[in-house]
Image (cartoon, rainbow, N blue to C red; front, side, top):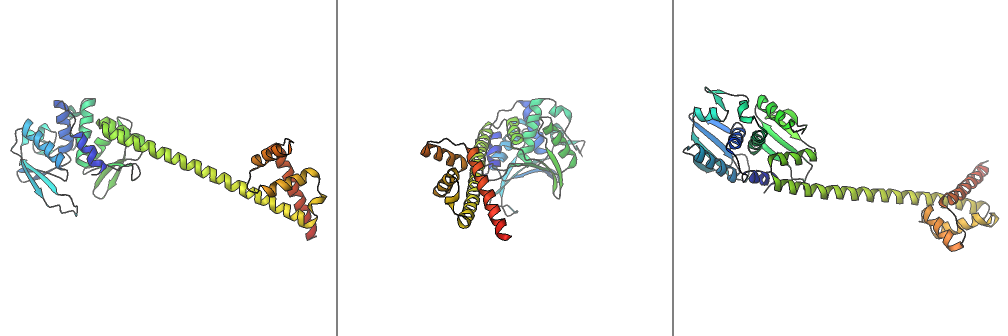
Length: 310
């Protein structure tokens, strides 16, 4: 079962006040009803969703609703569930779908005149046309694909009342409202009151954030190790130039000491090497002091190479 289906199934279990139920019904039916002659049809692959609205229509409007299972023609493995019931102008006006047989591009304001009703309308729209990627398997992404520009702009404005910064794109098959920020999608689920979905979404976000943080730390540690190895190789190369051109025995005691410990601990960082020398010789030396000695070694090696070229 997809994450989208889990979210929608949870929304179907929520309690609804009468005004909220009407707003949810409006959001859903305005974006899923199909009119064929004198009959209204709802098509959906989610059986739970179809049964929920069948119950609402039968209980609250006493419609003779017909339920049918069909083969899906869009190459989906899921079966298609179809609700059909007689066209009723009074009902279509009640849900803000039509006024005097004229389609309303946006619902009447009385359907969404309160915060609870706005949330319920958004639930209905999401149940009809919404989808959310599972945060475990892909990037954060929520989209709602609507057919008319008026409805798309209206829904976008409702969403942005909650500061979601929802974007709108014109697509070949309609108008897509989308969000890609994890915080916004999580807050959207909270607005819908899908509490179980929020918990799941936040758990995955915490896990992914921790994993990303760990990966960044590992990358930093690897980069540091690479720099340590590169520095040590440069130092060893300079030391080899001195050894081959003049010999180590001509160097002062402190420089010979550095030669000895760098060759013995080839992979140690300057900090680690300074601690080792301080511990084993009893003569404290700082990382800065050790770095100063290696600079002198590199300068000497560079002079020997220049002299050889001349």
